[in-house]
Amino acid sequence: MTKETPADEPAAAAPDLIGLIGALLAYVGARLLLVALVTAAIMGIGSLVNQTVPLIVAVAFGFVIAFPIGMVLFKSLRTNVNTRIAEYDEARARRRDDLQGRLRGSGK
Image (cartoon, rainbow, N blue to C red; front, side, top):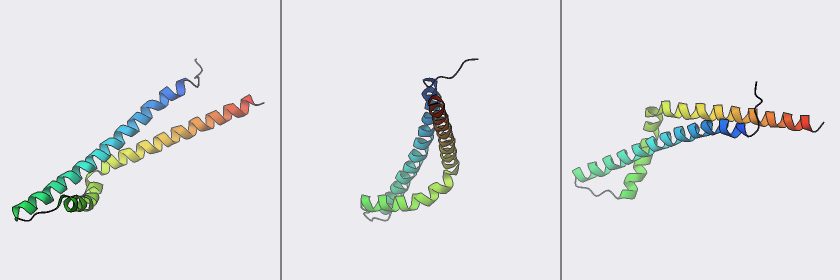
């Protein structure tokens, strides 16, 4: 039986944080890609009807249209991010409680 040292704890926490960051980047990337696609569609439709749509207007409408669509399309990615945040927060609370317990124990 080996006792876990404080030096081992950051190594155990790193994969959780890396997984959280990866899930978050995947979700944000998917949402931004959807905004880009909607913006391109708006610009394309404008050119089909011989209307010039300013880029800033197309991007603004792209964000407004893509937000609710992304909430539905990327529900699994959002759920994954929320689950990983909860797991990371729980692990952080456990590490904090363990540290506080060790500090109280060493002060006696």
